[in-house]
Length: 389
Image (cartoon, rainbow, N blue to C red):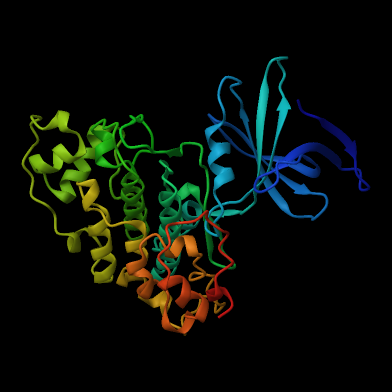
């Protein structure tokens, strides 16, 4: 079923050779050699290694998880469908044996990105500072763009948090990672409610809803945005009840209708009557009003009242990114933010005139924007003329 071979390279380093399948495209197995393997992460899921591909010299992350032979691995199925510039890329996958004879491990070979929003935010909070608002705009825009894409495929990430937002601090590129909790949501099919990390769990999950939508990711995104501006989680708490209390302290007591929208089984539940705290008082005095307005549109009790990820991208909070003269704080050019594919331009076409700034409009986009054919298979984010305009 699998072939794994170890040998020594020219410099005496161990070289591992595996028969792997490309993450996208062809299913034809090929030989992949890597070296310099070291453990960089552990979790309940398994182990993450860093390694260097021998052929290209490029660094990769290898996520090794125990495979249940009775089921297809959901993370693998989803990763093979995803192809977007703000989502970590699956380069290859292969299987390996374990210590026990019957054990089989799935190894996902992913592009390696060294930093996370979590670590960057922690760096600022340790020195009693908040992340510059220009970085907040840059990171959050790319997160919402990645969510617009995944949600358009019916896939819900279900674990949006700063630790799962990878960053290249030189270029400013953000990539969403860890699809270990992700699922293709089907209307009418129940889902588990005990997913998503605490602090970022939407209220309908705390209420035990099993019929939730991709809007749980939007709530989590709103929590991340609020956290970057506050320098600490907006809704901390060690239990669901604690978190609900924190949410009620800010949003006020949900109405009966809002509770029904989250989980109809809780409409008779007695909640303490608390008035909403004005958003302006939640944040520091110098927080831009458009940032506060965006948070208020994301953190709504009623899931369907939350704005969509693409509406978030089109929000005026991100207008500065659409200005032709905007650069990164290190004076480098912005990473590609407007290289929308045809697939992306068909998600909510009414937003395209805002999403593509005038200075990035080429003839191809105009054609794509005018075109209203149903969504096609997604393409990688490099095909649009905006990338070269």
